[in-house]
Amino acid sequence: MPRFTNLRRISSLDPVTGHEEILRISSGLEFPWDYQKALEMALFRTYCVPTISGLLERTGEFERRPQKRYDDTAVLMAELVEHGYDSPRGRESLRVVNRQHGRYDISNDDMRYVLSTFIYDPIEWLSRFGWRPLTRNEELAAFHFYRAVGARMGIREIPADFDEFRAFKADYEQRHFTFAPSNRRIGQYTLDLFCSWYPAVLKPVVSRAVISMLDPSMVRAFGFTPPPAWVGAAGRLALRARAFVVRHLPPRRRLKLTRARNRTYPGYPDGYRPSDLGASSSTAR
Image (cartoon, rainbow, N blue to C red; front, side):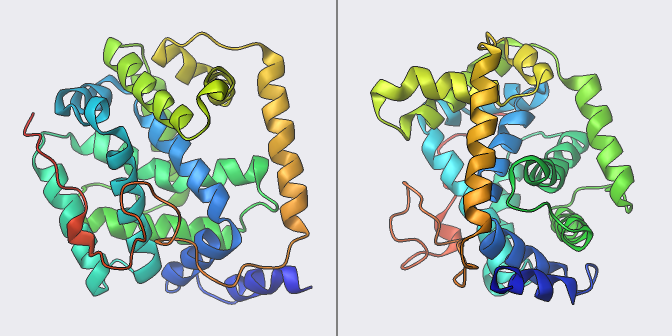
């Protein structure tokens, strides 16, 4: 079937040596919308760790420019996937990322944890809401891709085994997801950002819908009030209905990575370089 043309290409590749191409097809052609939403929720998840939310609060970036910080992160990661981490644009993107992180005192374990969410949160999202689940090739490709990115970011002791890294993530969340005022403030800034993408009249609906998609441990760590159970049920039903429709669409043929819509850099990547991203006036530590 034409719908599975990309999947056949993915299945023909080795997830170790071909991980860049597999992830490019997976996130840029097969599941661009799902990857975007999964990674939005993945970053949201990291703010449940008080050392992470506390650092973000001290920078002031989320309070002053949440849309820019979101777009910088999304576009820099898209550059790495679309062009490859050792391509000229990929290396330039990594220099921006490393320069930004180098300004702050971030623990290696927090860095490892954030890296793990880029691998496992999309896997979980797509197992629940994708038009098909990721194959083992796609899962392993994401692992090898982000492990290579993490090494180029100077992150130490990244597990060399897929299941070991997933276990590290689960254990880290169990030990570090706890309520802190900084979690609540950064979580609220992020929630307000998500709501700002829709008409103001829909803000209460969007806010409740987003919270309904969070794990109970995340709701507690943010100090949010959980919405009625039917809100989450309706949201999950809508996502599964969308997956049913997408499954019957023709395969995408043009990558939607760096050309995904962003509000800070109109027309990106035309006229932009990765080094144009990530500029900040903050010097907090």
